[in-house]
Length: 170
Image (cartoon, rainbow, N blue to C red; front, side, top):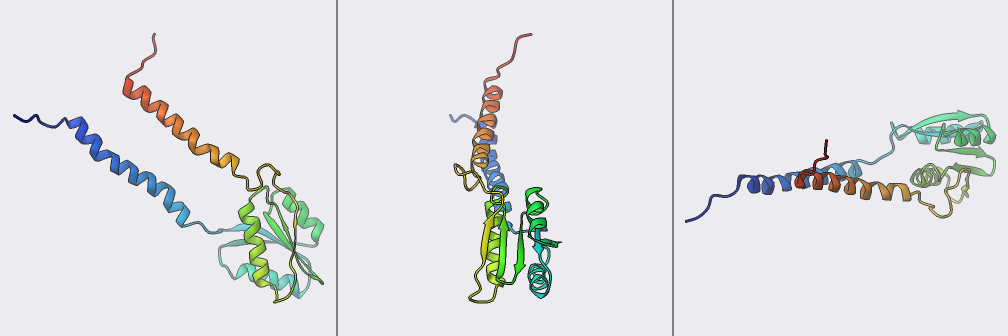
């Protein structure tokens, strides 16, 4: 004589793939759609070189929010105040990229790559890290790497309390 399956066990077995699918979707979907959107960057300087840099950023519709500055000092101040993630100074010797790798190393690299792609071939692109990341964590990954283990530990503790039926005394 066979025993009927435990309804709770069947529910758990059916629910686990759904939860795993939702977890994968929650992590994979944002990663697949990652792209700059209204990223505040600055262009400093006057003349046709600065205008060309600004047009280059504006060609990527919706990716950058361009702020204009009169000179390098104003652009540096905006980076330090976190008004912009980085800036490009148009000068006679070519573009000079100012970045803040402490704010986002990924954005700093994106800005360098975008300016290098716009620069005429053979033009050197100088880069200065105005607000550098700490030497012990140059990619700024320590905080982000600690969030997932902390969240999983919290969920595990909550699940243990729920499954074991632990209750405080009153």
